[in-house]
Image 1 (cartoon, rainbow, N blue to C red):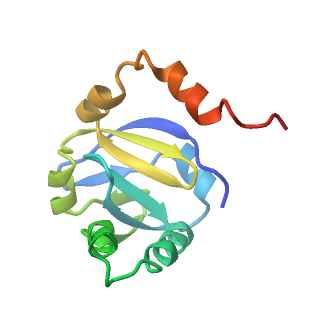
Image 2: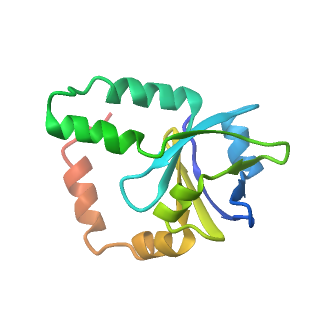
Length: 149
C-alpha cells in the first residue's frame, strides 16, 4: 500500500454515510474494505484492510497478563467495525462511533501514512487550528539528532 496523503472536507448525510473523495480512493485501490475504530484523541481511525491486518498483528503481540497491555488491547478494538463502500463510494459510520467522535455533518478526513483520521470539523479545527509556538522545538527534538542521508 502506498502512503496516503491529503486533507478532505466532506459532509455526512442524514443516514450517517460519508462519501469518500475520489482523490483518496484512487490512492487506496479498487473495491476497498476498511476497518474503523476509535482514535487516540476524539476522532476515528479508518484503516484499509491490509493495514488493519498489520496493526492487529502488532496489538495481538501484547501480553494479556499485564494490565496496561490488556487495557490497550481492549481500547484498540473497542468499536472496531468492518466497512465497505457502496455503489456511490460511501461508507456507513456506526452511530456509537459517531457519538464518540462528536461527528454530525461537517467532517474532515486526514490521510497520512497508511490510515485516515475522521474528525468532526469543529474538533479538528480546535485540535489543529493553530500551530503551536513550540512546533519548531518539536522538530528539533524529534529530528535534530538524525544523521543526514
